[in-house]
Amino acid sequence: MDELSGGRLELGVGAGWHDREHQAFGIPYPPVGERIRRLDEAVRVIRALWQDGPAQFTGRYYRLDGAVGWPKPVQRPRIPLIIGGKGPRVLEVVAKHADEWNCGGSRPPADVRAKTEILVAACGKIGRDPKTIRRSWMGAFLIGENGAALERRARKIQEVLPRWRSTPAAAVPAALRKEGWLVGSPEEIVGQIRDLNAEGMERYMLQFFDQEDMDALHLLAREVVMRVT
Image (cartoon, rainbow, N blue to C red; front, side):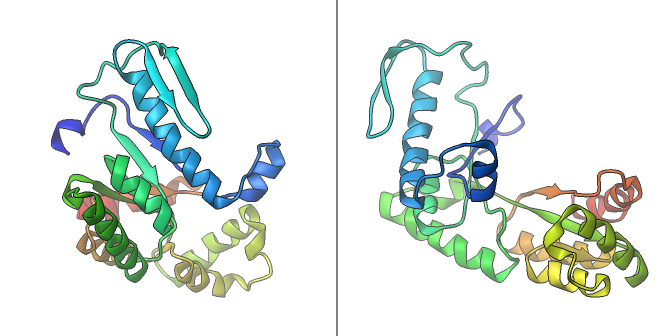
């Protein structure tokens, strides 16, 4: 993976999972099997269009007949492709095509370990070394110096995410951690990230919902990021 890292662009794709979001924007939301098959074909279409010369592809859903995609990528040998997902069929697509697997939404660390085992098995079926696939984790975080700070920030989460409004604010941090968030003091979050490191995670994409809380970002950068990089 070293020859693909550190470039100008990385492309992340997935099969789609948020049915309400699709409904809200009028985007078709086929059954999961079709979405995964479309993902598999879409990756091949994308890579075909990145190659020099006209692209040819005939699939169940997509077809190229002498198509040319411009501009061509500057990066060589290719733009790194990140595929996100955690279901067994998505992980088969990851094994075939991904330069990086993003296991967003997996509850650390046991769920991550179980999904990794599925990916390793999928790689074994096609003769690919799973170590050639970089691994990343995406999820949200809730950080606070103490319990009072966590509860205060939990109230802001309730404003942004309506599903948590009926939960007492004091109980929200524990509930979020059960859902797979990184939650706690800086020391606790450092420990949670190190647990994920032990499962093979190499980098993190952290979701931040209260975008006006710059103090939380500074705390994360100063007390967490500097200790795990």
